Amino acid sequence: MSSPGDDARRYASMLAERADHWSVTTERLAGTADAVADLSNALVTALADGERPKFCFEADETGVGFGDPEATVSPERGGVYLLTDRRVYLRLGVGDGDDESLSLPYADIVGVRNRHGRRRHRIDLAVSGARYYLWVSSRFDADDVTAATEYVHYRHTAETPDSGGSGSSSGEPQSLRERLERLGDAKSRGLIDEEEFQRRKDELLDG
Image (cartoon, rainbow, N blue to C red; front, side, top):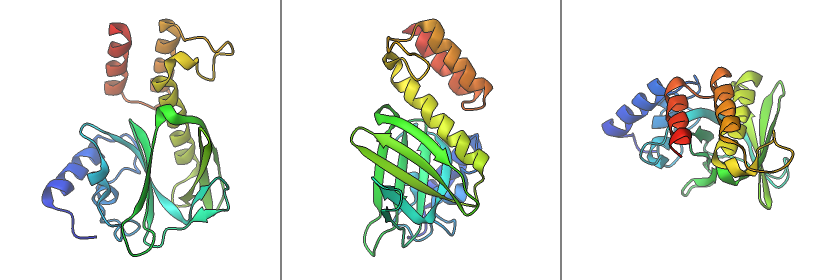
């Protein structure tokens, strides 16, 4: 890719400093890390105003499985999985043209789990009518992948409060108390920071 401009680099640095997880780095967001340097554009350019990165994993050379974990699209020019406070964003450098990308809002994700291995890990995402298998580089450990998976589950529950979440067997809407308890649990487990906890708590109480 062309060298990111000073504004993009400064913005990437600011987002990395504010991020809770070590995987969100200035180099990955600005497109200067080795694993993403050959992508068409810096990752930070795909973010909407106010969107905050939470995890940023480099793709394993296996890439992404579509419908089948072994039926993969492999990144020829690198790849990255970015989990933000709004969505899961995938970008793969395939061929000589533009990058292939996919955006999955948390409200659309109906299932998530992970698998760990010595050589690579995998995050499985299910949406209505489709499944995606994200092979993650072994430079990230099992705890990183587990934390990301828990965050996806938490964000889906927060985005779809009337579904009852996995903790409700009746499928009825969660009460305000249940939603506040779930929010507090997410904070205590380190899935969200104090700022996001207070913001979402205020949103619940004002609603």
